[in-house]
Image 1: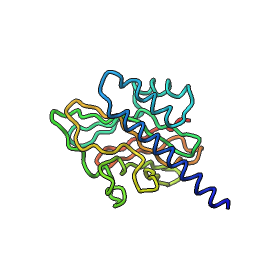
Image 2: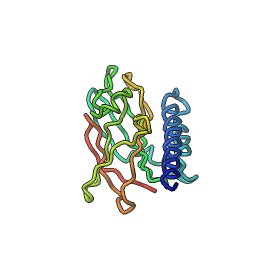
Image 3: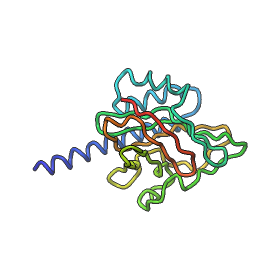
Image 4: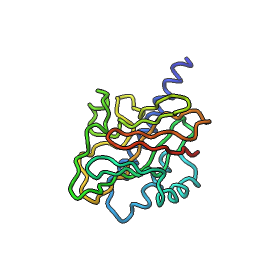
Length: 193
C-alpha cells in the first residue's frame, strides 16, 4: 500500500511541476512591456516563498552567469533556486545578440530519443557537481517531456525568450554547480534556497 501511495504522490508532484513549467513557458511567450513581472509569476508557480521573487529581481540586473552560444545566442542565468520538493529550477533569458534571425540548434535538446521526440527544448542542459562527481539531467514528466522551456525554433535579432530548466536537487551541502548546455560555454552557478 505504501508503494502505491508513493507512486500516486510522485505522479501528483510531477503534475504540479508540469503545471508550474507550463506557467513559466506561457510567461515566456508574452510580449514586451510586462516582462519584468513574468519571473515573479514563475517563482510563485514553483512554490517559492514570498521573499524569493525580490531576490530574483535583484539577480535579473546582474545574472549569475552568461553563456555564449553559436550565431550570437546568449543565455543569461538569472537564478538557480532549490525548492522543498527536491528540485532545482534554473531561470534565465535566451537572447539573440546577432544581426540575423538565429535558428535554435537542435543540439540544445540533447541526444536522448525520448526528449527529442517531444520537439525543441533545453533538454540537453545539465548541472554538474564537480566535488561529488555527479551529473544531473533535466527532469521529465511521466510522458517523457522535459521539464524545461520547449517549442521554439528561431529567435529574431535582438529578441529575448524567458527560459527555465528543472533538475533533481544535489545534496543540500552542494551550493555551487557547473551549468552546461550543448553548443554554449559552461559556467559555475550558485544554488540558492
